[in-house]
Length: 281
Figure 1: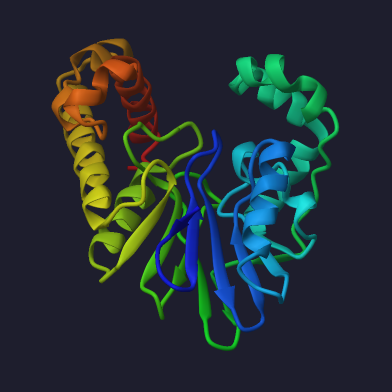
Figure 2 (figure 1 turned 180 degrees about the vertical axis):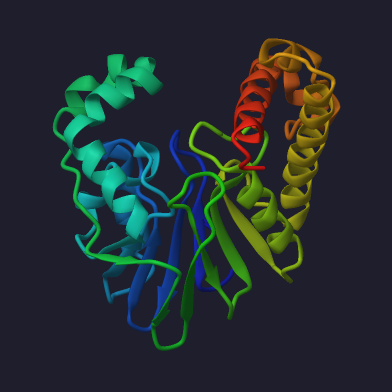
């Protein structure tokens, strides 16, 4: 567990999304839950040592499986954006198939454990903003989209700590399959303008606003290159081949051998092309 301030903690060592815990006078506020039950039980023990007041709420920044799978092991007082409700309903009916498709290795290794998971629907949903007044701490939830239509951010103003969900990921390319690049670029620019002590990204190490800037520049240069190639009459396949963005990859140069950089850029460029063709960016 990483202590960010006296009231805000994070955990980045599990395979799924990063986890957060905000200690308040009225109980613990958790952000995300682990993917595996054994990780959830360990995290539960860790956070319960931080306060005698128990868990008040658990917030999910989106509906993807690596954020929600073990909510039921913490509390049923869960909060998500209203658009996440349908996503979680779909996951509840199909999560085994989804995990098999998105992470076949995980399902092969852990299918017996995952078969026992119970997905619970959010108890509270909201549309634009929601504020939790928890005595000595204020928790501000805001709908921003970007990574998914349902993505929200969680901000603790007293500590100047921001949980961005998967709108920021460190040392890897974010999954863009449900993303909208126009709103994603907008929220990254918004984060850059905030005076923050720390950012807890969706995945990767705790960071600062420079991570938002790095991702924004990557997306904006991709947008510019795709737009230029489309204007020259390039097909989707030729646009993907023509985009050159290795130097702007969110992954640092010394660590790029660990990642399929070319494959990630190709996927992102294809999705950028599709959204541009549809007039979405």
